[in-house]
Amino acid sequence: MASVDTRRVGDSAGGSFQPYLDSLRQELQQRDPTLLSVAVALLAVLLTLVFWKFIWSRKSSQRAVLFVGLCDSGKTLLFVRLLTGHYRDTQTSITDSSAAYKVNNNRGNSLTLIDLPGHESLRLQFLDRFKSSARAVVFVVDSAAFQREVKDVAEFLYQVLLDSMGLKNAPFFLIACNKQDIAMAKSAKLIQQQLEKELNTLRVTRSAAPSTLDSSSTAPVQLGKKGKEFEFSQLPLKVEFLECSAKGGRGDADTADIQDLEKWLAKIA
Image 1 (cartoon, rainbow, N blue to C red):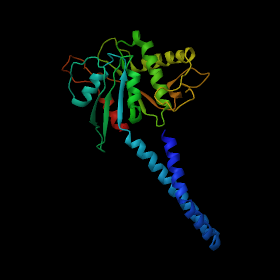
Image 2: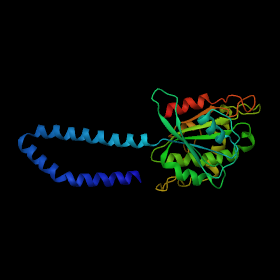
Image 3: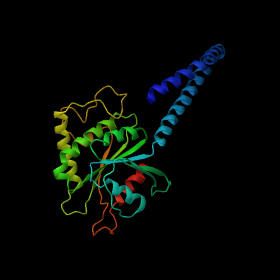
Image 4: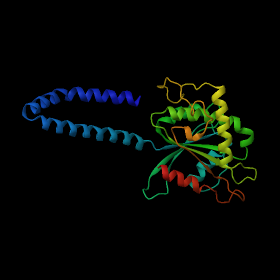
């Protein structure tokens, strides 16, 4: 929709200034053809600067970081830890939660963290609601339960990646491998490798449907490179992995291991 609106604005502005530009061009041609070339070049530079200012302002207005994942992945506790620094008992939610978050960097930037429901019947609906303001997506994985949930995780991730690639401004994308304090937790490297295998299988068994987040898109989005085994590096958006623990290693009162997540948020703010 943004591209359509931009064309309309451009057409309107062009129509209102066209008589003036035609008159100026005729006058300059009569006086000095070289002066006309200089004027056209300056106008082109001015229009380019206006265009990039418009693009940058749109990107800067996207301040939301969406926390998504399956139920019980620990995304709500991560959300609470980032905002308060404290542990709190959480439960499965049927609605979103949002709050302002001041990142730890020299610029003093702030983001809006939004925790979305993980229930299968709700998660895509809430993604659709908040996608236009998404600066980043944090896909939270339960590293301890990953082995038994890998297919469900991959199916949800498959859809979120397709939707993110279909957006006009693709968000930053992070896969946070949570619950690393549990002994049986899988490492981020292993999770990445297994997700690549599962996503490769999904590419074969499922046709890439049009994005559910970007209804203006009519062409299917291809996940990865056709004819090659899927790797995250093939995507047009950068997907990063990190390990974290919202609960901590020695009980509820222990300090959470979320420093890498905090650094990542500061980097993309």
